[in-house]
Image (cartoon, rainbow, N blue to C red; front, side, top):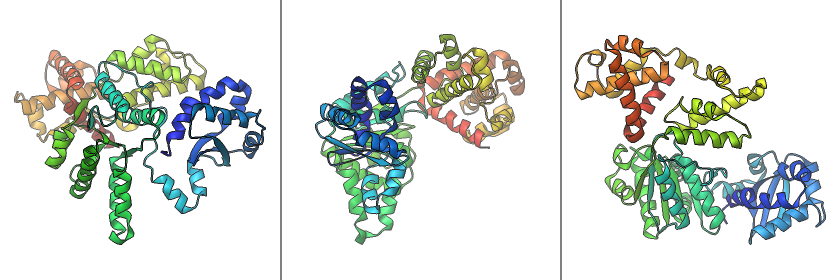
Amino acid sequence: MEKENYEIIWEQKILPELEKTISSISFTTHVSQIKPVDIKGNKIIFCTKSKLFADTITNQETSGIGGKIRDALLKCTDFITDFSVVIAKNREDYLAQLDEAEKEIIENQGSPVNPKFTFDSFVVGSSNEFIYAAAKAVAENPGDSYNPLFIHGGTGLGKTHILMAIANYLKLHSPRLNVLYATCEQFTNQLIESISKGKGSGAGTDFRKKYRNVDVLLIDDVQFLAKKQGIQTEFFHTFNELVMQNKQVVLTSDRPPKEIEVLEERLRTRFEGGLLADVQPPDIETRIAILKRKAEEKKCVVDMKVLTYIAEMNDCDIRSLIGKLTKVVFASKLHEKPITIDLVNEALKESASEKQEALQAEDIINCVCGFYKITKADMMSKKKNKEYAFPRQISMYLILEMMNLPKVTVANIFKRDHATVIYAGEKIAEQIKTDNKLAVEINDIRKKLLKQ
């Protein structure tokens, strides 16, 4: 059984069952204080910081808490029949207490999958309904529906969420399948480590066993294969072997295969040989729905006008959007104030970093010029060639977005009229919604600016 399966089953099956059979006081006082950290044979291992909690749970007779937990295990699963409790702060602390051999076995499973990232918690809108449907089809029929499934889109749009949703669905509904989630960086680092240990160590064989003896392989951020010739060769053979055996492969990237630089043609054609699913920046309705869902998760009442106000602050990055809501909710609890538009403005007025506050229009212009390899003189000229006009429009858009300057001021900077700036801002904002390459480029420029 996959080592992370217990987390999903505990969260989605056993806990709801225990809530029906244990008093709310006992549930809050005892059950909520234990967390699953491992499974050995037919026994699930819980951790708790307190020896008192551990003794209370394990020393109960069949009619007590321990008995209720065993009953729930037997009712909800056919492979976990018992449990034990260890004293540890968290899974990392638990792992630190194990001997090296046991620890290596557990850590060899891949990256942990967040049990909260499920299909149910994924807010579906017009921008992402296609990848949701494709991912759900893959989860329901791995190896049969779309193989490989290649999901691409800008950062912060939910690619990792949907990848982990596939893993969580399979672990809950097909627990006997061997599902491995890993980042491309993890794949790369583990391959390099196996090479560094030498042929005689058996590390290379262990590496191939890990990645090729799976039923479903989920790799995040595959664009990092770019320019890594040796890594691409190993990934090609891993990919080929799995697909040839009808094992499911799902990949995510911030750009489509044809735009990944220095990617071997044989890999590119195989990536394109399955289903390419493009996730777009969410529209305003989806952004509001996401904020509403997150507010409910935080057990916080937020007026729809306030959610709309926050949603209009950001049009392309869900992660940033949720971060803003988190800061507003924190400010509300800290100052014991209701969440209003005034509180939003107060809480977020410092959310821009000092670097962003100090950002000058000239910095943005210079950064865009460098990115598109044109001179500042060409940028500011009257030339209408696309290679100059388009970066000029992007500069106007970024100045409006990042500095919140009046459009008249931006027009004066570029020595253009007010209407030109309005057109540029609206054109780029609209194009980002349908042009993933542009969305990625603008996000890269934004990151460069904030690192200066």
